[in-house]
Length: 125
Image 1 (cartoon, rainbow, N blue to C red):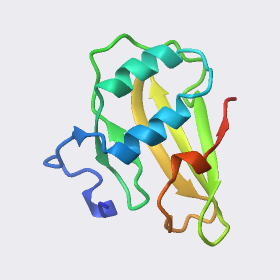
Image 2 (cartoon, rainbow, N blue to C red; image 1 turned 90 degrees about the horizontal axis):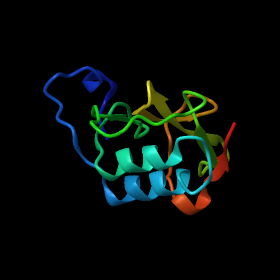
Image 3 (cartoon, rainbow, N blue to C red; image 1 turned 180 degrees about the horizontal axis):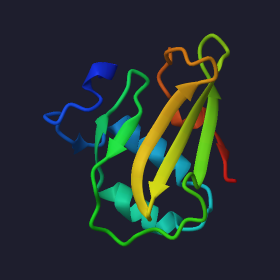
Image 4 (tube, one colour; image 1 turned 180 degrees about the vertical axis):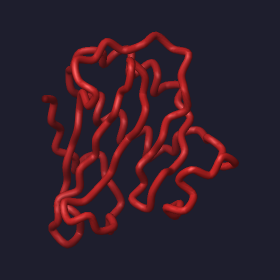
């Protein structure tokens, strides 16, 4: 994972999604929300780069159709870390386009476990 000092490194290239990242996003998209199909089209061709030690991702700009979401975070999930602290996974969509997959713990500590898509508890607000 990247260190926070790499957050704004202009030479950090975007890369294709890993298989685990694709599975996490598929889990988030498995629930209904406004704009979901357009978000799924963006995910299908997405490039990303890690932006913190927890595995949060920034998405490269997309040329796909904008998603008509109701909220900036149309879907989120949570799961328990190995020590019982809750991990949050939020999908950010800005002006209709994927912007970030944010991952953080309730106590602001570093995520200790691999994020297993099957362990996500999904929430649509």
